[in-house]
Image (cartoon, rainbow, N blue to C red; front, side, top):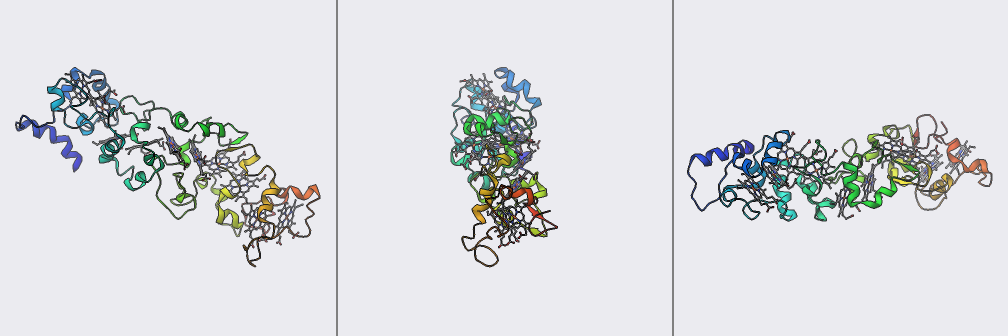
Length: 294
Ligand code: HEC
Ligand code: HEC
Ligand code: HEC
Ligand code: HEC
Ligand code: HEC
Ligand code: HEC
Ligand code: HEC
Ligand code: HEC
Ligand code: HEC
Ligand code: HEC
C-alpha cells in the first residue's frame, strides 16, 4: 500500500497546485537535464520501479534552485542514522530492524551505503560497492592473511564467501551457541552453527555422540578462517587437543569426575597412541561404536 502511494504521490501533487514555499514532488523527468547519466542507466537498476524521490525526497526546491546539495537528500553528506532510515523505509523486511540495530556494523557507524552503491554498483546482484571479498577486506585486512594460511576455507578462491557464515546485516539472538556471538553469524537450519550448512554430516544425530561436538561446538577444536595446523585444528598436534579435555580434571561427564582420561591400554609414550584419530576415526560421532572407532 505504502509503495503504491509513493508511486502515485508525484502525480497527485502535480495535479493540485502546491503552495509555493513548500517542497513538492516533481517525478523523474526533470532530472534528465542535469543528471542524464544517472537517469539513463536507471532502467537496469533493481530500483527502476522506484521514483528518484523515493530515496532522495521531494526535489521541487532542488529543481527550482538549479541543483545543489542543500536542497535535496544528498547521501554524500548525510550522517549514518538518516541513511539507515532512508533505506529501511522499504527494506525492513529483508533487513530486519532489530538485527541491524544491534549489528557490529551499525554500532560502528558502518551503514548501507558503505557496502552498497545504488548508481555505481560493482555487482549487479545485491548492488555491492565492490565484489564481496574485496569489500570485506577493505575494512578487515587481518582476515585476508588468515585465509592465506595452509589450512583454510577457500574464500580467496571463491569457493566459500564471508556471507556464508556471517550476516553483514546482523543476526538475531538464537538458541545456538554461535548465534549469540557478537560476530553476526548466519545460523544454519535457523538456529545452528553456520558450519552445519555445508558439513551436515557432522550434525548427527548420532547413536553415539561426542559431547564436545554437541555441547561446545565446532570451535572447541577448529578455528573458522585459517590455521597453520592441519584441518583448521586449534592445536598443531591432535593428541594435545584431545588431552585438553581427556585428562580427568574438572567435573564434567557421566560420573561427574571429569572427562575420561585415556584408558590404561593407551601408552602415550608409544608413538602409535599419539595419533588418536587413526583409531578414533569417527571423532564427530558414530552410529556403530561408543568409542568412535568406526
Ligand atoms: C538544473 C539542473 C538540475 C536538475 C534539474 C536536477 N539536479 Fe540534482 N543536482 C544538480 C547540481 C548542480 C547538483 C550539485 C552537484 C554537486 O554539488 O556536486 C545536484 C545534486 C544532486 C544530488 C546530490 C548528490 C550528492 O552529492 O549526494 C542529488 C541526489 C540530486 N541532485 C538528485 C536530483 C534529482 C532526483 C533530480 C530530479 C528530480 C535532480 N537532481 C534534478 C543539478 C540538477
Ligand atoms: C534506492 C535509492 C535511490 C534511488 C531510487 C535513487 N537514488 Fe540517487 N543516490 C542514492 C544513493 C544511496 C546515492 C549515494 C551514492 C551511491 O550510493 O551510489 C545516490 C547518489 C545520487 C547522485 C549523486 C551522484 C552519484 O552518482 O553518486 C545523483 C545525482 C543521484 N543519486 C540522482 C538520482 C536520480 C536522478 C534518480 C532517479 C533516476 C535516483 N538518484 C534514484 C540512492 C538512490
Ligand atoms: C522506495 C522503496 C525503496 C527504497 C527507499 C530503497 N529500496 Fe532498495 N529496493 C527496493 C525494491 C522494490 C527492490 C527490488 C526488490 C526485489 O527485486 O526483490 C530493491 C532492491 C534493492 C537491492 C537489490 C536486492 C537484490 O536482491 O539484488 C539492494 C541491495 C537495495 N535495494 C539496497 C537499498 C539501499 C542501500 C537503499 C538506501 C540507499 C535502498 N535500497 C532504498 C525498494 C527500495
Ligand atoms: C557491512 C556491509 C553491509 C552493510 C552495512 C549493509 N549491507 Fe546489505 N548486503 C551486504 C552483502 C555482502 C550482501 C550480499 C549477501 C549475500 O550475497 O548473501 C547484502 C545484501 C543485501 C540485500 C539483498 C537481499 C539480502 O538480504 O541478501 C539487500 C536488499 C540489502 N543488502 C540491503 C541493505 C540495507 C537496506 C542496508 C542498510 C540498512 C544494508 N544492506 C547494509 C553488505 C552490507
Ligand atoms: C566500511 C568498512 C567495513 C566494511 C566494508 C565491512 N566491515 Fe565488518 N566491521 C567494520 C567495523 C568498523 C566493525 C566494528 C569494529 C571491529 O570489530 O572491527 C566491523 C565488525 C565486523 C564483525 C564483528 C567483529 C567482531 O569482533 O565481533 C564482523 C564479523 C564483520 N565486521 C564482518 C564483515 C563482513 C563479512 C564484511 C563484508 C560483507 C564486512 N564486515 C564489511 C567495518 C566494515
Ligand atoms: C567458515 C565460516 C566463516 C567464513 C567463511 C568467514 N568467517 Fe569470519 N568468523 C567465523 C566465526 C565462526 C567467527 C567467530 C569466531 C569466534 O567467535 O571465536 C568469525 C569471526 C570473524 C571476525 C571477528 C574477529 C575474529 O577474527 O575472530 C571478523 C572480523 C570476521 N570473522 C570477518 C570475516 C571476513 C571478512 C570473512 C570473509 C573474508 C569471513 N569472516 C569469513 C566464521 C567464518
Ligand atoms: C559454505 C560452505 C561451508 C561452510 C559454511 C563451512 N565450511 Fe568448512 N569447508 C567447506 C569446503 C568446501 C571445504 C573443503 C576445503 C577445500 O576444498 O579447500 C571445507 C573444509 C573444512 C575443513 C577441513 C580443512 C582442511 O584443511 O582440510 C574443516 C575442519 C572445516 N571445513 C570446518 C568448518 C567449520 C568449523 C565451519 C564453521 C565455522 C565450516 N567449516 C563452515 C565448506 C564450508
Ligand atoms: C572434539 C574435537 C572436534 C570437534 C568438537 C569438531 N571436530 Fe572436526 N575434526 C576434529 C579432528 C581431530 C579432525 C581431524 C581428523 C583427522 O585428522 O582424521 C577433524 C576434521 C574435520 C573435518 C575435515 C575432515 C572430515 O572429516 O571431513 C571437517 C570438515 C570437520 N572436522 C568439521 C567439523 C564441524 C563442522 C564441527 C562442528 C559441528 C566439528 N568438526 C567439530 C575434531 C573435532
Ligand atoms: C572439548 C572437550 C573434548 C575434546 C577436545 C575431546 N573430547 Fe572426547 N569427549 C569429551 C566428553 C565430554 C566426552 C564424554 C565423556 C562422558 O560422557 O563422561 C568425550 C568422549 C570421548 C570418547 C568416548 C568415551 C565413551 O565411552 O563415552 C572418546 C573415545 C573420545 N572422547 C575421544 C576423543 C579424542 C580422540 C579426542 C581428540 C581428537 C577428543 N576426544 C577430544 C570431551 C572432549
Ligand atoms: C591404536 C588405536 C588407538 C589409538 C591410537 C588411540 N586409541 Fe583411544 N581407544 C582405542 C580403543 C580400542 C578403545 C576402546 C577399548 C579400550 O578401552 O582400550 C579406546 C578408548 C578410548 C577412550 C574411552 C575410554 C573409556 O574409559 O571408555 C578414550 C577417551 C580414548 N580412547 C582417547 C584416546 C586419545 C585421547 C587418544 C590419543 C592420545 C587415543 N585414544 C588413541 C584405541 C586407540
